[in-house]
Length: 205
Image 1 (cartoon, rainbow, N blue to C red):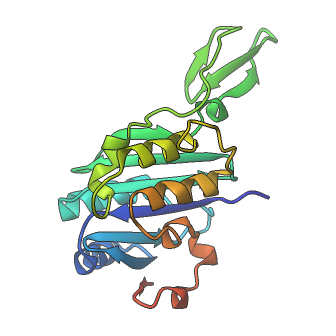
Image 2: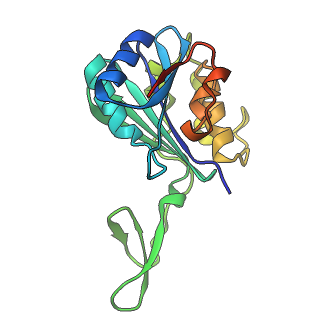
């Protein structure tokens, strides 16, 4: 079975982030990563899925600071949502081909769709990432941003442009590392999180 988890990176102070999450009633482990860079590992709840995008939108409104909601699915796909002022302003998908669903329509034809959009028979879907502009991730970096390194990680490539064939969690780790942050907290599911691993963590129950 592949790895699935949801986390958030918030560009705000630890205390302010903790207070905003507490006011919103969010159960989570909160880990400081750097100055005004905080990892939030939210409880998945009964449905085994944490609503990181809506939590991020609420946090960005409460704090007036950007948030990056991240979702890794079954070691195959990374979704990132860049959020400012309560709105998702940018979406990154590590491989758009993984979003394509095949279904049989009322006429017995097999069709394909992404979300609610149904495409013509024979439509050639793009492959690889979308939204892989490294500059969009600049507000979340700690220290000077290496655009080349972030861009390569978003594309799943090495410095020479070779496809590294990473699993999604490996690529996600590389993206966080390229932002100058310790990746462990942001690549851990709440259900697998031991707060003792992160000595400065704050546990919200």
